[in-house]
Amino acid sequence: MMEKKKERMKEKQKLRKETNETKDNEIDSEDEDKQIKQQAELELLLMDEEPSEKQHFNMKKIQEEETKSSKKKNKKKILNEKSASDAFSVDVKDDRFSALYTSHLFNIDPADPKFKRTKGMEEFISEKATRRQQYDTEKVDVPPKKKSKQSIINPELSNLVKSIKSKTKHNK
Image (cartoon, rainbow, N blue to C red):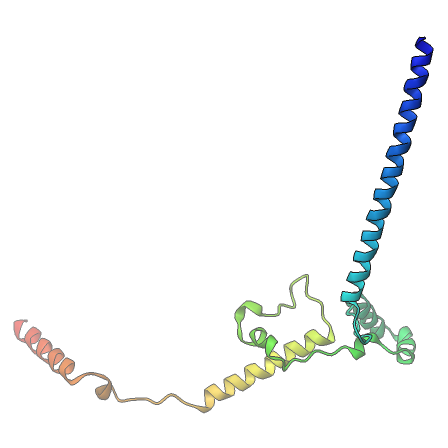
């Protein structure tokens, strides 16, 4: 009798497991369908109508090419190969970089360990130097107008000063 009960219990458990598995499979397939639909929608959103020809900026490759160009052995190889860094150029006239030239908060420090000397950075440094020269020449060209001391000082004040000076001389 005990054995029959155990067998029945085992059979019930097997049936429960099978029903749970089928339910889980149905849920999993529904989840997979939802995920596939969401992924397809995201791809449609991110997909451009025309393929873009953007070039990615890789600092390591540019630095390696610049160090190779300094070595005599590799100069011939580099002349034969087109450099990716040659295609990249910085627009130093862009208004977004105006704070770089005017504000002291954005000075370029070549002594900083994070500073990377590249063609773009050289362009920024030279542009800042030229702008500074232009600013200095503009400053020198327009000398400040000197006004005579008498016109600056108010006549009432000058009379007051004279009277105080004369009184102090008489009291001594």
